[in-house]
Image 1: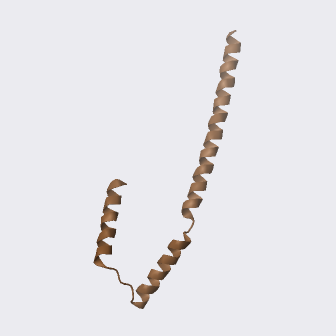
Image 2: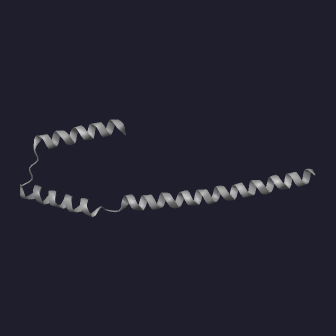
Image 3: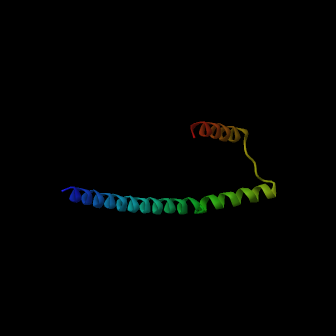
Length: 82
């Protein structure tokens, strides 16, 4: 009886270890998928940055004071939340 109980516990532990390994593998896959997604360049952002760089280089980039103030406030509020 004791041998059977010990064997059953061993089988259950092995199953749990296998389930943990499968879960870890799935978690790793999800992490890699999200990292790849985060590292992808956003075409709209790339284009916007290129336009701004061009405007700065040509001396035509002009930002109003209100836009700067709004951006600073958003940045401060975001930093305090995060």
